[in-house]
Length: 219
Image (tube, rainbow, N blue to C red; front, side):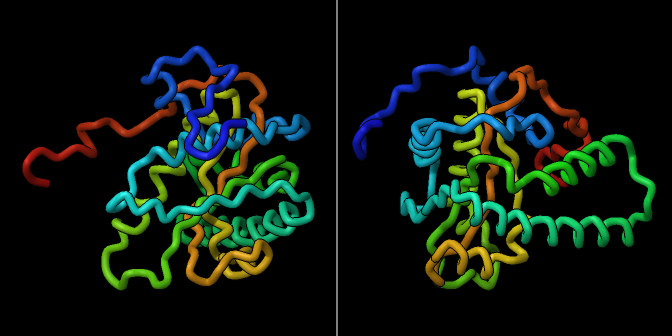
């Protein structure tokens, strides 16, 4: 591993051009390899790339929790499952039991992750120092950590690692903070489960047409 400030060189990355990397970094749940360990050096490389992301006034107020302890991962997974089941129940109450095929696949995939999260070998929790949350728009705060978390996920994809963006554990943010010894002035932004993937042939996901979401000069 390189020393602080030294650029790390990865021995192996997938043969992906920038557009392929950006469009095939998927939410990986069912294709996480739950048996294969992840080398600490790979996580460090991804974190080196994560911290090249922008942050407000270049404050770099981020912190990264890398959780590999089995008991701690299992406890966080319990909190996640409780939150996930409450989320499913609320959605079903609001929409009814019928869902479109895409949403049903997402639900099934999320349920699988909920059942198996504790088996994922590494959790990375992106945090930011924030003694108090702004009362108004919080884009400046979260914009100083979430791009770095996405950088981490892109770097992981390039190295044959799968990730998914999860925030449901934040319903139990205080409990997780106590479990991991997170100071009161540090807030958690996202939990990223990390594992090698079963296969690397991911494709772009379906998205809404730009005509429905892009507005020029006015809404």
